[in-house]
Each structure stands twice: as structure tokens, then as C-alpha cells.
Image (cartoon, rainbow, N blue to C red; front, side, top):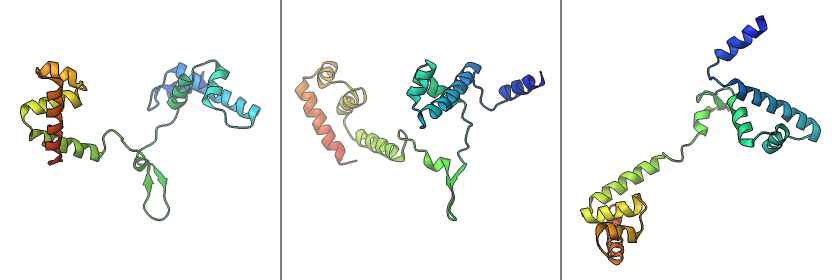
Length: 161
């Protein structure tokens, strides 16, 4: 009874709450991993663990990730007498890099130099993903005119980018 209360306390007062079923699956996956290591004398693949348990590999991955202890972004990864390398230094954000911000600002400023009609056409083409035919029917001009206006607008914008 005391051991049960200690387990309940540790489970309920953890910094990250993980469902009991997910935690059980993770522990079964770890046990299956040990069995497969003993059987094949190598590290098993996630697919092999999933097959052993009769589960989907995505569920196994999610369960194993769920039981990992959280790591601080300021956790030192490497220190060799010089500057310390932290976890935060190893993480990158591909979507929100500084270059993207600068490019977006440059494009916005260059578009502000265009007449309203050309700005609208470029917005429909490149930001809403419409074809030249769709833009021509929406604006009320021919596809050839859309093509010419688009080409001249892009040429005009290159001066400002």
C-alpha cells in the first residue's frame, strides 16, 4: 500500500502528465527492445519493436517520447575549456529565420512601390496561389495582360529588393 501511494504521488506530481496507457506502452516497448537486443545482438528498429508488440510504429514513437525527461534549453552539451555549448544552440527554426523576416520586409516594401492593380495581381498570383487564368477572370482582363503586368511588376520590384 505504501509503495502504491509513492508511485501515485510520483505519477501525479510529475512536471509533465502522461497518460497511464501511454506510459504502459512505453514500458512494454522498452521491455520488447531489451528482448530484441538479446535475440539479435543489435539495437532494434522501431518497426521491429512495433511488430513485436502488435502496435503502430507511430504509437511506439509517441509513447517512448512521452516518457523522456524534459531537458532545459540551458543544459550544457559540450564544454572544452572555451565557450560552453547549450541545447539551445543546437536547435534551429527553419520557418522563422532572420533571413525570412528580412525577405518579407523587402518584398513588402518593393510591392508598396507598385500601382494598386499590379499589387493586387501579384498578391493573387503569389500569395493566394491562383493561376493567371483565375486572376484574369477575377480582375476582368485577358490572361496575356495578366502575364505582361506580372512580368513588368516583378521587373519593377527588382529595383527595390
